[in-house]
Amino acid sequence: MKKLFLIMFIVMLLTVSAIVAYAQAVANDSTVLRLPLVFTQHNSAQVVDEDFCGAVPEVFELTDSQGNPVGQLSVSNNRQNIFVTYMLSGDYCLAATDLEVATSLAEVPQENGSPLPDQFEFRSQQSQCLQHRVYVVPFTDPRKLADKLYLPAHASFTNAQSGAPGEAWTTCYPFPAEDGTGYCTYAPKILQGKPFSLAVGYEDLMMVDSIDFDYNDWLTDLNGTLNYCRTSTEHVGLYSLEFNIAPEARGAGLDHSFHLSFDANTFPSDGVSTLTIWDQDGNVVDGHTDLPFLAAAENDFTLIPLTSQAFPGILVNTIEDRPFVPTQRTARLTIVFDEILPFNSDPSDPTLPENVHGANLLFDPYLFVLRTSIPSYAIHKGDVRMLILPSSALSWSEERIPVWSSYPDVIPGDLSVTPKVPPIFPGSWWLNSNECVYNGVPCAVPPVEALDIVTTPIASPGP
Image (cartoon, rainbow, N blue to C red):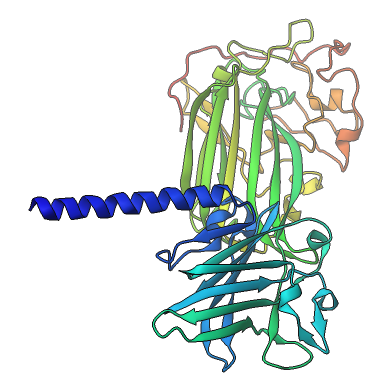
């Protein structure tokens, strides 16, 4: 028994030593990564940034001179590098590898239409039996600007059992000499961000209440980016999106919970979501990491659990002669999709007239209003009590100043009847504002009279 334990201990010690030696070899070699034979299912995506759309590899066959498959070539990329991985199967061992990564077929070293692997840019030889070889190729111009890259990949190998030698090529397309050699092409993936910027403001009372249409009862910026995965010539699909939430004002006595929800089938793919909520000092106070995002279901995220946590008190950042109060809560929501599929965000453009109340936004930035004397309720996109300012750089109305008094192109509503009649927003209404917006200069227009400020305690922390 002691002898068996000693043998097991020696085996473990040798295994640990091999791993340490391998790690040191990788650390000392920034161009070629040597992987031991035991890793027969190695995937080149393991060395690529996991948060990048090029991490999913394209795989091509390596075939010998008789056309028999002997392994694969896996190609992927991140922002800085292209990763090309040789992977032999069965009892085959790599003796040498030769790789060229060119922006045109003419750049590949050739003679009379036959490739010259001994003149390729990336080459290596090895004496030990390895089945994998990873080349890290700098992803710089002109490779980054090429429509596609030409990858002739050559391998010399031996059979570990018989010692018989052989050669293999990638043969997606033959070289002009048609001598059994070949190459494959790869279109590198890049991320292209499509930024968006808007602010959303609310009236939190009912239409039969003393509503004033200043749309500042809760106002927050919503900035972000839709990240599209693409090649240099065409879009591949939507990879991820990010929302940054920065509250601006709370001209209300009521409390609320601010949400972002996505209707079922808004996006074509499932994914994972990460939500982070910070306090005024940058400390994380709430959120989650990598929760499933199910495309076929509604996904609802509570971004600011209580708006009074962002702005304690009432009528914050809506009255000019009071000091500006920085928000005490900010948030970021990211969604990374499992599949990179086509997606058109154009109908969600916040500058479109039909989106003045958020009707066609790809998300629903809804406000859950917490009441005690009556049941609590939510204000969803499409509701006239929600107003989309199609840029977070735009200012909002001062307290009790109707939006038509701060943005003169807006057609006034009627506050003299019950229920109140909302204003009408013509196209590009936001381009014309005056000093009645919250900008440091008090408005000369008298505020709306008889506005009821509700200061009763909230009934519950959320919907």
